Image (cartoon, rainbow, N blue to C red; front, side, top):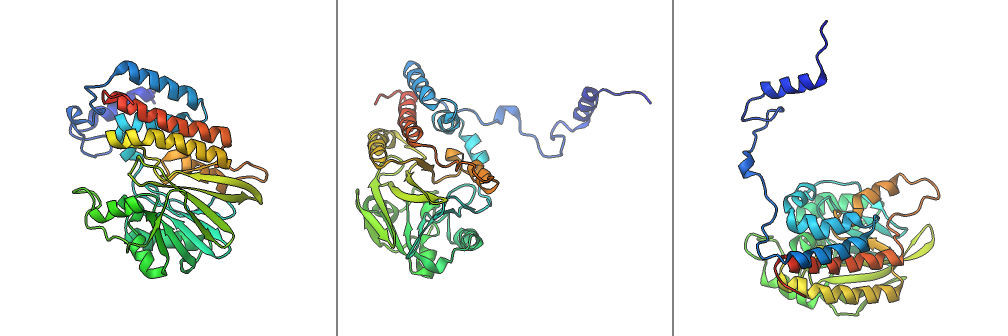
Length: 341
């Protein structure tokens, strides 16, 4: 029997494939039509380099993935984001003694358990996802949707309020959002974005610095514009095996999308850093699993050995670096647009 090198086999397979098809038989796209990086003809490259360098130094190794996503991949290679942030099922996970992840691959949803009922942060894309993903995820973790008392919409994009109306009608839970984003939702989305998505009934308006208390738990809210004009961020306590920690849940981890949003986000992140530092925040969660390595951390939690640290507890200093990176990446993006802060 003659010996055929592996490389030869691979070349033979490639040669036998039709020019119009991949080896597996799928149609091949012409290279000229491949997605390209975002065109940035007005970029101030010197300023981009300055702010990228600052963000990289802040990131070190532990926050490099977050920095790379926010500063580089999302704005310059958005097709990579779409390739990862697709609608898909993920395993519901108990993240802390009182906090549960019940969302899907593209967008997060968290339930905070209190002595007097449940508080839900965000509701996925639509009523169907709320019925067939969110509710079963809750039930898999021993949570009864009938115990929902409040639904917090972190910002007025449909992938966060999409299931709110159905849950509001089904459970009687009150819906909380900032006044600015209530107005934004009711004006309607831009054409082609979240079209014909039912809105929750206008309910509670949360003010900047306002609180929500349910049973033994108090959440403090702040309006942190950038991703939307009325993005709502939250600070609240949790425990991990009885040890107290403080969560800083920024409601707009997607950052600003245009010049106005980017400009608004820089002082908002600076203020958020001050607020979370004063509160002793040491836990980082995000409202999209693509951020903060959420899915990876949940997998680690589900397979943790006794004594393993909770990966969502990043520490106060690391949390502050994360917030500063978000602001620095906004500066990077302004520089790519040929603008300064």
